[in-house]
Image 1 (tube, rainbow over the protein chains, first blue to last red):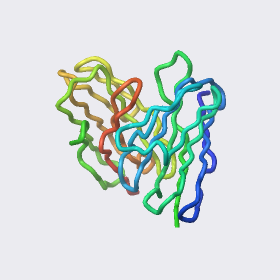
Image 2 (image 1 turned 180 degrees about the vertical axis):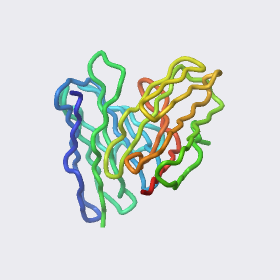
Image 3 (image 1 turned 90 degrees about the vertical axis):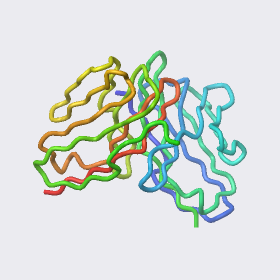
Length: 115
Length: 108
């Protein structure tokens, strides 16, 4: 149980285009999902907290107009990287917390390469 | 300044050796978690420690929470190639803050 999936697992896009990444909790419902970014050989950095039915909360320094988050249902959150640039190339990881639970379950990540 | 500093940053050892990874902070935490992340995957929770001085064992892995709940250590006995990965400590409930990470490579 407590499986989180991400799609796509990897994506290559051209500079200036937008990319959407999906995060799904497969066997549980989650009112809260989190989006992290991880650069090569570095740790995870929280980008934003995604709340079902309300606006996401972004961490300091994360541009909300560039990283659009939509938490459409209790099992799906999406992250859209708008007008992507090469410096946005990174490993994006989501996590989800089950209703009433304390543990976060992580997705397998999405590797984004912007050329 | 990082909230959680891990050391060493990178460790390359031979199969069968023992090792210890440290997670240090100047802040006090109510709990601390350890994760392992393999290349191209998300982190997987190994353990949560909540009591100062607490020791938890997971097969060959021993986790300890400092008495003052400011630091923690992870000791691996007789490391195996399957232990290779990025080890991360983390704190927080609603929002997790991860440590700087320790990359472990265990060679056969």
